[in-house]
Length: 480
Image (cartoon, rainbow, N blue to C red; front, side):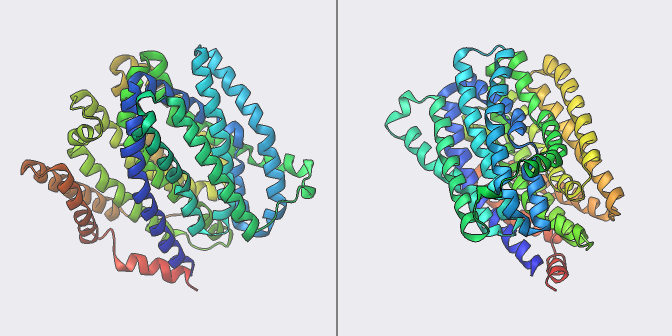
């Protein structure tokens, strides 16, 4: 019943995130920036990206390595859990010291370094939560993993609603926002550990062996280097923009980028579900084509539909979120939004190559992407400021996404159907056309957004991207 389980749990994952993530972006994160201003939030955003780049020092690739290993042999959790938890405990202070040293080298002020310290605590807890969740998803317990994927956000929403809409609103500080995230993430990590303790294994430190921990960490180093390089090409633009053009300009970029971050959370969670399934199928030498096609058809259709609506209704979107009709902000948002399908491609095909063990290839691709990102950002930010960072991100992500497809096809003998590309192009063109008609007839933003749901589903079936045969074929493939 693996195929049926995959589809039902994928739909649960999408539903939970559709319910929670818009609330987080529209009621919380957006209002934090509106209350604190472009400069304060722009600084926070740059420091957050700096902490994310260095967060690999907390993990050293342990989470991805653990997910693949436990998915292939679930009994390994008894030995892996104590050894890898101790490893993360050792890595935490190392990460914190290196991150603060990097902030000092980049000449951040004392108050900025305190924010960076808080973010280091948040990253430590976030890394712990992701590691614990990797044990749950590796056991194919997708319902529990889906719950944990939004649990911390639900807690943050409840806490921040009181901070933003209650008594403290007038004196709100960005540090409070970080405190709320620290508490919520820590509690979510505790719940994740409780699930592991009750369902899979108990933590017994007597099983800890230094040599085993060392071997596991060394085996995970390729994952660590890969994630570091991916962090550079995904996050360096914001950090370089803040250092080169100032926090206020980065605040504008953060406004435009915010919705893309929310949308990509779905793809990121999707990838977390695909990794253990790809690893299991490849390990058993079974065909991955049906589950891969299901993932591509669903995620790419959703991403293209969202981009079509967002591109046409970019100005009303920015007006609704920020009460800002600036053509400059709208222009940045449109460029950023065009990266979303590429990010969906990257989420699917990088996960496939990871499950196949192509670490050297992935590292070479990520290294090339990092160098390209830094070079493009250096020249484009000087020329076009925040818009330059957006163009750089768009170019880098599409190039890397297409490279992933090329090597996935070559390494795994995948069939690429030209007619599928044509169907996606037709679907996207029709979505753009219908939304342009909505705008021409002056249909308001909210009604147009609601009309896009049945429109997207209808066109997906009309273009042959979503079919009963697609889903039924995937279910029958894995139900034996």
